[in-house]
Image (cartoon, rainbow, N blue to C red):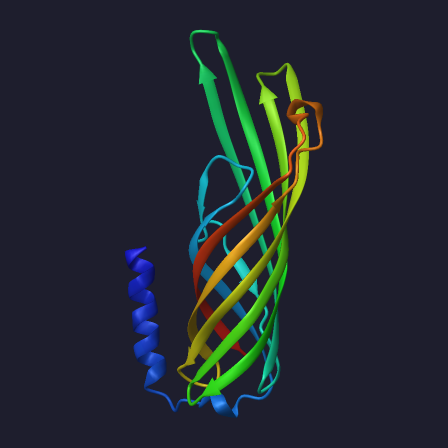
Length: 202
């Protein structure tokens, strides 16, 4: 994390020596971005850092007052559980796929763009339990998310920006679709999240 922070600082110094483009002049644009932050994914029992589970973004500025931002993410995780007294070992394999869309009105001030609106998305979990060589159980589920969000980005030049965003995530939790998790789930999780963004515009 320290090395990554140093790289970002060096990039900011280099880029800021160039002629900056004021954000108020940006009426259209297409780019690529990545978010950094902490996240807990409902339905699993482990914390995931978004440095390990990155979400990638395609900011699409349609006008000086509006943008869309599709996002996609994928994470693969395995966890081993062993009971030496009983003599068994279980391995759990998780594949987690996220997909979403941000819908944002914009306000532009010199080199800064402020956005506010909502992100809509889903997180799909695929789980495989392996108990030794004898038993394999598979299951999956999909959670849906509505996230009122606000944030901003600072433009160092016409291509590169650094930003942040705060979200209030409302997660509608689904249930796994096999008999191993054969319970009725009706759960809604409300949580806050802070993200940092790097974006590059073409």
